[in-house]
Length: 236
Image (cartoon, rainbow, N blue to C red; front, side, top):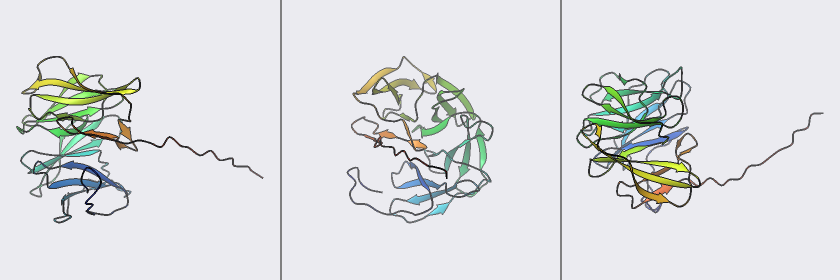
């Protein structure tokens, strides 16, 4: 962990192949997972200073794509690509009281945010048959398509709780849209919130290639070097 400029670094954990997940609402706890094992990922909770490290109950064969905290911090929701089609994703719920994991929703995108009111999750499928933006109603476990066909990696609720933000890459630039939303329903057309005059990858090495603050004052993104080496192998 570090500040936004890369300073004040603190080592939180080590492992074979670590992937960051999400911050808790208290901005002090976070989740990550180790994808280096052969029997699926191991998911962990930890404090920002490296204390209170805790492994979530494993599910055999599970490959985790994301983890989002519930707003009351009593549960987390994990997105797991299905075994039959990696372009579709199931959502599992872990209650932090130690109870068994529960399959929460089927074919509902990779979740990336939870509403401050605690009733909805947001997710997206970047590619495949069900590309689009989805929401999950936590009370009835229903998955609802909000913007079918929209190709984006992550979706986040805006600070006002009455809209959400998502990025789309096209023609050498990235546009971040604001979609009016309230109580589980769209309340108007998407609007351009910010246009970035250059392109960056939405996906990079299996994870998100970018992130932005909810007020759009800061964007961070991956910048691949664009270099490849070509070798000639001769057989004798």
